[in-house]
Structure formats: structure tokens, C-alpha cells
Length: 78
Image (cartoon, rainbow, N blue to C red; front, side, top):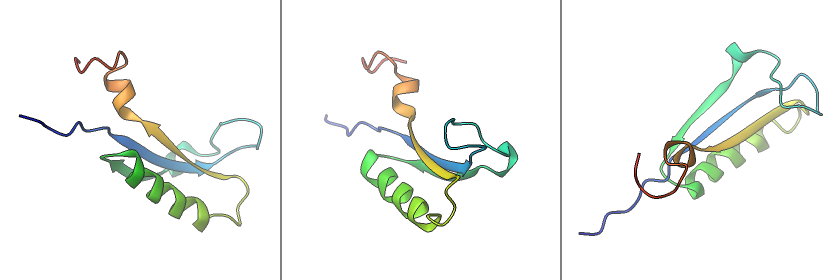
């Protein structure tokens, strides 16, 4: 039986205090876009959000590879 592996990705963003660090201005205002089943769909969501905030230089969106946090060894065992 062959099952597709879920490779979960989180997309989120917020306004940074400055452009040199990844320190958010207001953690309560973070935009949690969502959790996606693969990198391609996460990238599509990230791109849409990033392009929609292009006028704010301090606004940044990120993709977090949740599957790597859940299974850091990559052996499929949690």
C-alpha cells in the first residue's frame, strides 16, 4: 500500500521592527495564513501574501517546513 507523505508547511507573516533582523513589531498581529500539505501550495499562498504587501517594506512572509520539525531525522518516525 503506497501512501503519499504529508509534508506540512506553515505560511505566516508580520511586520518586522527593522530590515536587518527577523524580529516582529507586534506578535499579536502576526498573519497566520495557514498550514499546507506540500511546498508548492505553501509557496503559492506565500507568493500571494508577499505580493499583496509589496508596498510595506517591513512586512515579511515566511514558509516553515513543519514536517522537518515533526520528523527532524527524516526517518518517518515521530
